[in-house]
Length: 254
Length: 270
Image (tube, rainbow over all chains, first blue to last red; front, side):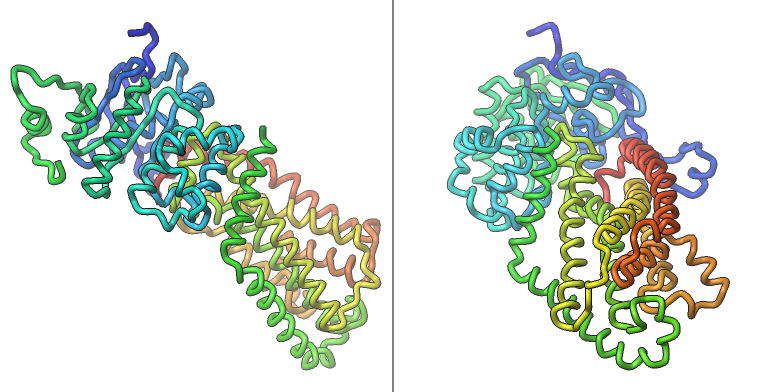
């Protein structure tokens, strides 16, 4: 492993203050939600980290903090040594954030026009950036169709294509197989295996333990804003480990 | 680099508009029907109001109200376009998708409204064109340089109000007191439908504090009476002061709102 972690999270804490009239006037912001509490981990180039945990445990907040969409209350995130709060531009160049939110595209524009728009925001020439990515993701045939005509599976692959346009070193995925049928989910997992094999570092938030088993990687669990890493030992399966870690809670969709 | 990004927004919005093939037609027809209404209303009110309208190119109501309607639609875009762009982006998640690219929120927001400004300028010209071709509105006296300067100042004086409004939305997500208040007061007290001389004195005093009042008076004098910029120094000075005071202030507030939105997590909520 290299000396510099791809992602290093140190003492990361996030508090969402509650906006109330009293808070506005007093400026105290004491009330609110502690979404993350002292999260620490390091992820090295080429590693995959799965983040599991019940709803509301802080997984998406963690991903959004790494993606520079939120500012930490305390602590530090560094990406290849760059402090995300102080140097967001080099951090954004190394990150690909897969939002897994199909409404974050322009439904009435074609796939090509959507990707071209985001390519230009990355200061890329669409003619150079789009073809290799869509070819690898088998999306070439869909590019001239309007985005709203796509199936959910194709939309999700377009989302991944958008995240890969600038050839980032690190991919952040927030529940990538949610709302996909079993076949599309399996195809997407296969795609993620290929991306992993290209040496990309990935942080994947998921509720599906089969993703951990089929893609493979380190496993972190979050509960009530706290993060810890788990390693199944002595024949213990991941589901038992997970259930014990989160206090016996059963996942409906695993 | 910035030009490529700004172009991306212009192309995106043009393609979006073109994807609704009848939108241009309906936009044009709504302007046409609006003008027809006021054209015939002009017959009704011109006789009794000629004294009030005498300082606007000969006392006809239609040219007076046409300039008012055209500028009101332009002002509406200046007030609402930025907050509309932010609201749409927050609601759909496109804002997050843009923010993870190496593009600042300021670039995203200001580039997002360029197409709307271009489009609203075309609407304004369509008002004048329909008025001239179909309803006998005359541009013979118009001082085009003065009119162009008044439009630019209208934009600069109203844009900060749109930026304040967008800043409010960034933090509080809903509710837009600035646009509602300024828009309603401008329609009522700015003189779109009637000259300010018909208002009681105290309401005329209130209207003095609205940038729209001065913008509309300046544009009417430029278009209907052909006044030069030298004759419009009061309007130019007042709008210039509004712009010089409010623009830096609104940009500072916007910067603070972005910081707060990242802290509070409101960028990605709706």
